[in-house]
Image: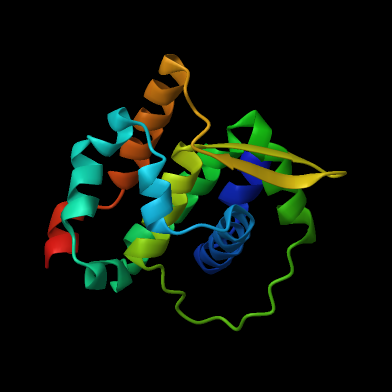
Length: 171
């Protein structure tokens, strides 16, 4: 079974828990905050409508939870997008193999800020992984024009999974 097939086979609860696990690992290795991520983003990314909405939002907006359907759709799309990247696919696959979730079935909440932080990190970083050296993240290292364009499109695609992002951030 491919990594994407494994991800697609996860039920919604396990998917959200696995997304949270992957997000936490990536953000822990990156050891950064949203302001630093934003400061290292190419202008092409920062100037998108989606990123403008994020920059205009108040801090409290990022603590809002996405509704369950949006959270699951966003988590699945994000993980499948990551798994399609050859440099990240092995990491996702290894984590799927070794991840143990002892959480009880209950609603898992995905906050807007957590979703946005992961998208910004992945869009603006070179991520590599191998079993010997583990996970490595180089923030702000994407300079090639074609790669910046592809990652900007990825950022927009993932953020647009969240319906009415600007309204959510404003309200």
